[in-house]
Image 1 (cartoon, rainbow, N blue to C red):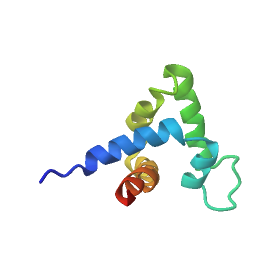
Image 2: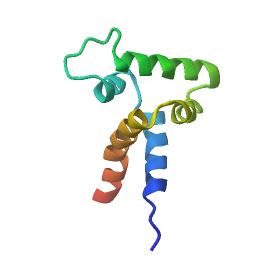
Image 3: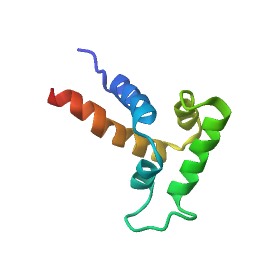
Image 4: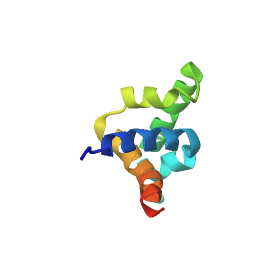
Length: 92
């Protein structure tokens, strides 16, 4: 039997980034509850995202994030994406 978990993670990540990713989601993933936005990891990641969008557009920006985020922070986004998309697929 083929394990499709890597495919599901990849698809979930891209769908999430195209459809749900925004400043609020960034803060949910990368900031502690109640943490000030200014100088936070969330602000840093959001600034990176905005720069990638300016350079290559929102469609290609998720690929830039994959290429430039460290594994720990990328995993946080992938986990959030899979909670929405893989979890939803398993419920239907």
